[in-house]
Image 1 (tube, one colour):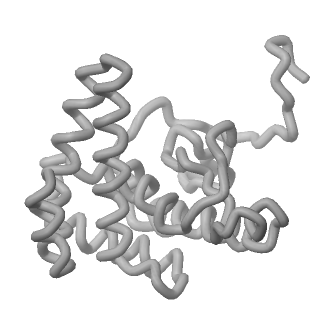
Image 2 (tube, helix red, strand yellow):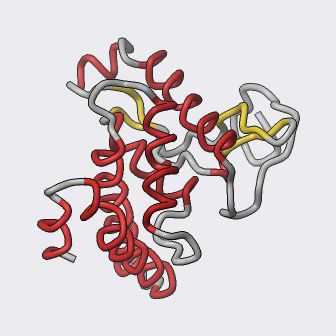
Image 3 (cartoon, helix red, strand yellow):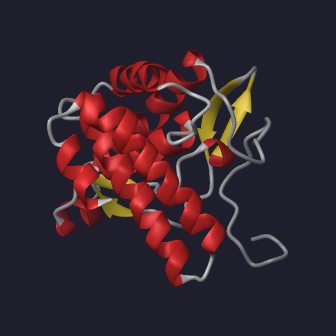
Length: 185
Protein backbone atom coordinates (compact mmCIF):
# COMPACT_ATOMS: atom_id res chain seq x y z
CA UNK A 1 0.00 0.00 0.00
CA UNK A 2 1.28 3.47 -0.78
CA UNK A 3 0.91 6.69 1.22
CA UNK A 4 -2.52 7.32 -0.35
CA UNK A 5 -3.75 3.83 0.63
CA UNK A 6 -3.55 2.52 -2.95
CA UNK A 7 -2.49 -1.05 -3.52
CA UNK A 8 0.73 -1.33 -5.52
CA UNK A 9 1.05 -4.63 -7.32
CA UNK A 10 4.36 -4.12 -9.10
CA UNK A 11 6.65 -1.48 -10.54
CA UNK A 12 7.38 -1.30 -14.25
CA UNK A 13 10.44 0.80 -15.05
CA UNK A 14 10.17 3.05 -18.07
CA UNK A 15 8.46 6.17 -19.32
CA UNK A 16 4.76 7.05 -19.30
CA UNK A 17 3.58 9.77 -21.71
CA UNK A 18 1.72 12.65 -20.10
CA UNK A 19 -0.65 13.10 -23.05
CA UNK A 20 -1.77 11.77 -26.41
CA UNK A 21 0.55 12.24 -29.35
CA UNK A 22 1.71 10.74 -32.61
CA UNK A 23 2.63 7.10 -32.43
CA UNK A 24 4.19 5.17 -35.29
CA UNK A 25 3.25 1.79 -36.65
CA UNK A 26 5.55 -0.19 -34.35
CA UNK A 27 4.09 1.54 -31.30
CA UNK A 28 0.51 1.08 -32.52
CA UNK A 29 0.90 -2.60 -33.30
CA UNK A 30 2.64 -3.24 -29.99
CA UNK A 31 -0.12 -1.29 -28.24
CA UNK A 32 -2.71 -3.55 -29.89
CA UNK A 33 -0.93 -6.72 -28.81
CA UNK A 34 -0.87 -5.81 -25.11
CA UNK A 35 -4.66 -5.65 -24.58
CA UNK A 36 -5.04 -8.76 -26.74
CA UNK A 37 -2.83 -10.68 -24.32
CA UNK A 38 -4.63 -9.10 -21.35
CA UNK A 39 -8.02 -9.95 -22.85
CA UNK A 40 -6.98 -13.51 -23.65
CA UNK A 41 -5.69 -13.98 -20.09
CA UNK A 42 -9.01 -12.81 -18.60
CA UNK A 43 -11.43 -14.56 -20.97
CA UNK A 44 -12.09 -17.48 -18.63
CA UNK A 45 -12.12 -15.60 -15.32
CA UNK A 46 -15.21 -16.56 -13.27
CA UNK A 47 -16.29 -12.89 -13.20
CA UNK A 48 -16.25 -12.83 -17.01
CA UNK A 49 -18.13 -16.13 -17.38
CA UNK A 50 -20.70 -15.18 -14.73
CA UNK A 51 -21.39 -11.80 -16.33
CA UNK A 52 -21.75 -13.14 -19.87
CA UNK A 53 -18.96 -10.84 -21.03
CA UNK A 54 -16.05 -11.76 -23.31
CA UNK A 55 -13.12 -10.42 -21.29
CA UNK A 56 -12.10 -7.95 -18.62
CA UNK A 57 -11.85 -4.53 -20.27
CA UNK A 58 -9.19 -2.06 -19.17
CA UNK A 59 -11.51 0.75 -20.34
CA UNK A 60 -8.76 3.37 -20.47
CA UNK A 61 -6.02 1.77 -22.60
CA UNK A 62 -4.24 4.71 -24.10
CA UNK A 63 -0.70 6.04 -24.16
CA UNK A 64 -1.02 7.68 -20.75
CA UNK A 65 -1.67 4.26 -19.21
CA UNK A 66 1.24 2.57 -20.95
CA UNK A 67 4.77 2.11 -19.77
CA UNK A 68 7.30 2.51 -22.59
CA UNK A 69 10.76 1.02 -22.83
CA UNK A 70 13.03 1.63 -25.82
CA UNK A 71 10.25 3.64 -27.46
CA UNK A 72 7.64 0.86 -27.34
CA UNK A 73 4.77 0.24 -24.93
CA UNK A 74 5.38 -2.89 -22.90
CA UNK A 75 3.15 -2.58 -19.84
CA UNK A 76 -0.43 -1.67 -19.00
CA UNK A 77 -1.09 0.37 -15.86
CA UNK A 78 -4.00 2.04 -14.07
CA UNK A 79 -6.70 -0.60 -13.84
CA UNK A 80 -9.25 1.31 -11.76
CA UNK A 81 -11.82 1.37 -14.61
CA UNK A 82 -11.68 -2.32 -15.53
CA UNK A 83 -14.91 -4.28 -15.76
CA UNK A 84 -16.17 -7.28 -17.73
CA UNK A 85 -17.12 -6.33 -21.27
CA UNK A 86 -16.53 -6.72 -24.99
CA UNK A 87 -13.16 -6.80 -26.71
CA UNK A 88 -14.42 -4.25 -29.22
CA UNK A 89 -15.50 -1.84 -26.48
CA UNK A 90 -11.92 -1.75 -25.21
CA UNK A 91 -10.44 -1.66 -28.71
CA UNK A 92 -12.66 1.23 -29.73
CA UNK A 93 -11.26 3.37 -26.94
CA UNK A 94 -7.72 2.15 -27.66
CA UNK A 95 -8.03 3.16 -31.31
CA UNK A 96 -9.38 6.57 -30.31
CA UNK A 97 -6.48 7.15 -27.92
CA UNK A 98 -3.53 5.54 -29.73
CA UNK A 99 -4.42 6.75 -33.22
CA UNK A 100 -5.75 10.12 -32.05
CA UNK A 101 -8.86 9.40 -34.11
CA UNK A 102 -10.59 12.65 -34.86
CA UNK A 103 -7.42 14.68 -35.15
CA UNK A 104 -7.64 16.49 -38.52
CA UNK A 105 -3.83 16.47 -38.76
CA UNK A 106 -4.26 12.97 -40.18
CA UNK A 107 -6.06 12.10 -43.39
CA UNK A 108 -8.87 9.59 -43.40
CA UNK A 109 -6.73 7.29 -45.58
CA UNK A 110 -3.86 7.44 -43.08
CA UNK A 111 -6.14 6.69 -40.16
CA UNK A 112 -7.74 3.78 -42.01
CA UNK A 113 -4.27 2.39 -42.71
CA UNK A 114 -3.26 2.80 -39.06
CA UNK A 115 -6.54 1.33 -37.85
CA UNK A 116 -6.04 -1.67 -40.14
CA UNK A 117 -2.54 -2.18 -38.71
CA UNK A 118 -3.97 -2.08 -35.21
CA UNK A 119 -6.73 -4.57 -36.08
CA UNK A 120 -4.25 -6.91 -37.72
CA UNK A 121 -1.94 -6.76 -34.71
CA UNK A 122 -4.83 -7.52 -32.34
CA UNK A 123 -5.71 -10.40 -34.63
CA UNK A 124 -8.91 -11.71 -33.09
CA UNK A 125 -11.70 -12.82 -35.38
CA UNK A 126 -14.50 -10.28 -35.32
CA UNK A 127 -12.20 -7.38 -34.42
CA UNK A 128 -11.75 -5.87 -37.87
CA UNK A 129 -10.82 -2.28 -38.65
CA UNK A 130 -14.40 -1.33 -39.51
CA UNK A 131 -15.78 -2.83 -36.32
CA UNK A 132 -13.12 -1.17 -34.18
CA UNK A 133 -13.87 2.16 -35.89
CA UNK A 134 -17.58 1.84 -35.08
CA UNK A 135 -16.76 1.16 -31.44
CA UNK A 136 -14.32 4.08 -31.46
CA UNK A 137 -17.21 6.35 -32.45
CA UNK A 138 -19.30 4.84 -29.66
CA UNK A 139 -16.52 5.55 -27.14
CA UNK A 140 -15.99 9.09 -28.48
CA UNK A 141 -19.72 9.73 -28.23
CA UNK A 142 -19.87 8.29 -24.70
CA UNK A 143 -17.00 10.56 -23.68
CA UNK A 144 -18.81 13.58 -25.18
CA UNK A 145 -21.95 12.72 -23.19
CA UNK A 146 -19.90 12.19 -20.04
CA UNK A 147 -18.30 15.59 -20.56
CA UNK A 148 -21.70 17.22 -20.86
CA UNK A 149 -22.99 15.47 -17.74
CA UNK A 150 -19.88 16.58 -15.82
CA UNK A 151 -20.22 20.14 -17.17
CA UNK A 152 -16.84 19.77 -18.89
CA UNK A 153 -17.64 21.56 -22.14
CA UNK A 154 -14.07 21.36 -23.41
CA UNK A 155 -13.95 17.57 -23.14
CA UNK A 156 -17.49 17.21 -24.49
CA UNK A 157 -16.79 19.37 -27.53
CA UNK A 158 -13.44 17.68 -28.24
CA UNK A 159 -14.93 14.18 -28.05
CA UNK A 160 -18.01 15.12 -30.11
CA UNK A 161 -15.80 16.70 -32.76
CA UNK A 162 -13.60 13.59 -32.80
CA UNK A 163 -16.67 11.36 -33.23
CA UNK A 164 -17.96 13.44 -36.15
CA UNK A 165 -14.54 13.43 -37.82
CA UNK A 166 -14.19 9.67 -37.36
CA UNK A 167 -17.60 8.99 -38.87
CA UNK A 168 -17.04 11.28 -41.85
CA UNK A 169 -13.46 10.24 -42.60
CA UNK A 170 -13.19 6.65 -41.42
CA UNK A 171 -16.36 4.66 -40.67
CA UNK A 172 -18.29 5.82 -43.72
CA UNK A 173 -15.42 4.64 -45.89
CA UNK A 174 -14.89 1.32 -44.10
CA UNK A 175 -18.42 0.14 -43.52
CA UNK A 176 -21.90 0.46 -44.98
CA UNK A 177 -23.09 1.14 -41.41
CA UNK A 178 -21.01 4.31 -41.38
CA UNK A 179 -23.81 6.26 -43.06
CA UNK A 180 -26.24 5.16 -40.35
CA UNK A 181 -23.79 6.41 -37.72
CA UNK A 182 -23.42 9.78 -39.41
CA UNK A 183 -27.16 10.35 -39.34
CA UNK A 184 -27.13 9.90 -35.53
CA UNK A 185 -24.28 12.33 -34.73
